[in-house]
Image (cartoon, rainbow, N blue to C red; front, side, top):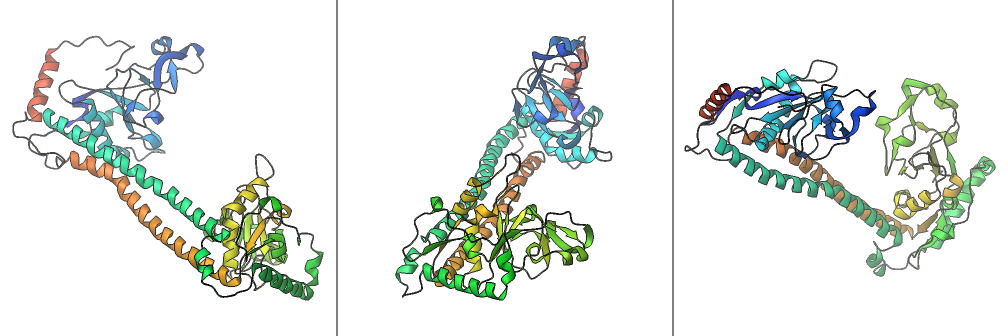
Length: 488
């Protein structure tokens, strides 16, 4: 162990507390549960003080099992699995399961608050000691023999007071930093709402000279679509090539120069991917499902693969290309992203695709629209099914699409991308700040138990003297017979 501060002494956890562990009364005995005695499991050690329990046992359970009753003021620590090292002070007399070790601080030697903070500081050391099996486990023996540095009693009080003060500030800071991502999410939603309603470019339009109207843009788009269908008559035969009216129940105020169309009228074709199982492959062509489509992005890194031969056998409707809009139609419906890559891939039936192949609309603007709140509300309202939600492409085709001039579409995209870039930069900084804040608690605890958090006072009785005196007193005191009902 490193050199200790003046007045501190090296000892073990077994020397500063009386340790025991709990047990689980038999579940086959109905008279063991539903009593008045709190029975705490390791997963419940989530706060500094445990004041309630998820389950309660009876006096018969204490007598008929290895469960014991520990006094309030004892400190519990988890010994098994994912919860190893979690700790809390028992604010009530309580029993625990066998996954908890419980230490009753020796009176006059160490306080419950300092023992609690000391165990928090040693959490990573306990996790390290627990490695080697199927899951990390430690035992009472490991805890009792764990070496610690013990401060003088007076310094313990100063450490606890300072820790309470600083860690309360850390908790407040964590809450404030953790709230920022939600604020950024609302900011992005507000930006999109302003963009698709015309508010974002309201002042910009006042300074704009005469441009085409939204109605003219829609007309030109329809002319381009008609010309394409003349070149590709096979599209007219597709049942999923939808020419639908707008659902007027979802219209909202837009600028006078704008007009509404629908996704069905805007898209050359709305369809969805293949329905039959596809052969999986370790190499080949990427196969996107609904989980790979997120808002504004396709997560190609998480998608599966199918064979090149299976991909070649698919029809065009199963193989989106750059400029198409994908939207999830099964499960978590409504997530939408534009295809920005030239890479070949295919989709299954959980993903719908809008063919947006004309050159009259800014496709990035359409991607903003598909993720805007009014589109998402439409999608949720039209959802079918209970356990697994489903979006009908016939319903989606009726969703309104507000259309400004091409010039304004470009300006809207520029402004949204600029504001989103600002939010993205801020988000990166917030994640870095969260990482630093999350390490603050352990850094402060480590500083406290290096003797660097509060000054040492030469007038404090050295911890070594205190420890020897307490040991002598305990050795001279006859041991009382320990009952099964109450431990430590």
